[in-house]
Image 1 (cartoon, rainbow, N blue to C red):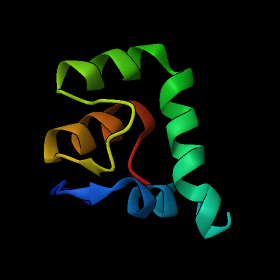
Image 2 (image 1 turned 60 degrees about the horizontal axis):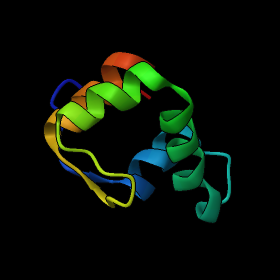
Image 3 (image 1 turned 180 degrees about the vertical axis):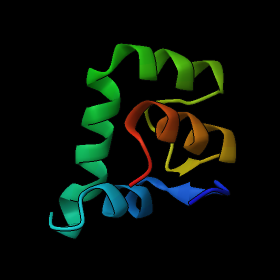
Image 4 (image 1 turned 60 degrees about the vertical axis):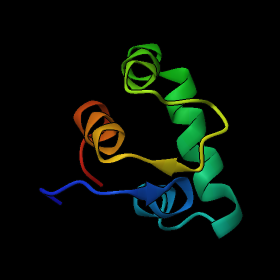
Length: 70
C-alpha cells in the first residue's frame, strides 16, 4: 500500500488483525496505538483524537511508519 488514504479504524484494524473477530479488530489497533507512546504523540500532532473513527491519509501514513504496512 504505497498510497495511504482514508480508512476507518475498523478497516485498518482488519488489515493488521485479519484473524481476529470483526468486533475486536479496531479495539486491538487502538490498543497498539495507545501502548506505543511515540506513535500516539505523532498521531496527535496530526490531529488524532482517541474517539476518532476515520483516519486521515497523514494519520494512516504515520501508523504505517511506526507499525509497518499490514
